Image (cartoon, rainbow, N blue to C red):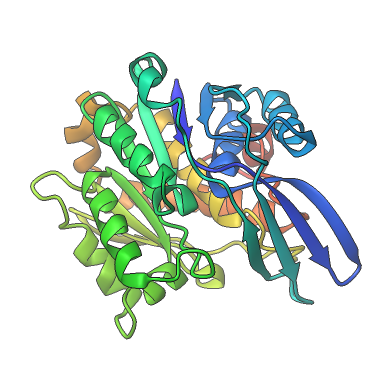
Length: 312
């Protein structure tokens, strides 16, 4: 069982051609992406007992994602995305982020899991951020930890505070993915690749096995103990960029699970991953992201779709 902890919300997307609503939230998208790649996965997040909450849970159930926690009394969170004529998105959020029932159920929910992923708003927005950190610390002795900061400066505006929280989670993680935009905001004036190289040393002698930087059309790059790797970004006609990074993250984790490198007991093997194999993993994840940008919304590919384009 794989576990994703974080926010689910409704994306209200305003395009030049009109407005539409659909389920979203970076962690929720990763959970759906993992399920479409044929992995058993549970989603630990919050949603309200309202029409938007039902839209979220219906979406998760259709994807065969296990919904771990019941609805609560707060409204379901909403993100309003404005898409420009090039398909790039900017966001405004109406958020409720807390997991009051999680602490008492952690052992039950995390017992069977071999990998825990978190990130985005859930990792830095109070009061839920402390609950997420606690869950990661509890899960780490048994599970691989992955983290994607997916920074949202319009919500968490204090870069110094966010940087501290992000670095704490990076030090606990085995797998880290960040965009070049994330790193440029967290460390102004520093080459994002240099920031990623520094992250590889956080938490030493444990810390990340590798750190990935996504760079849009330049393709992903990563650093591990064996060296550095990169992969090209497949050339596709872009519908929009919504959910592309989440599809990349799901495929990245899927490739790790496919190689049987998940679980705390396999941490030494994951750290021995060489740069050549890491390049193959990046290529697989980049192809998943390319499928997503080729069609509207956060719509990650199935394993069959990726197989049709070649094996990882």
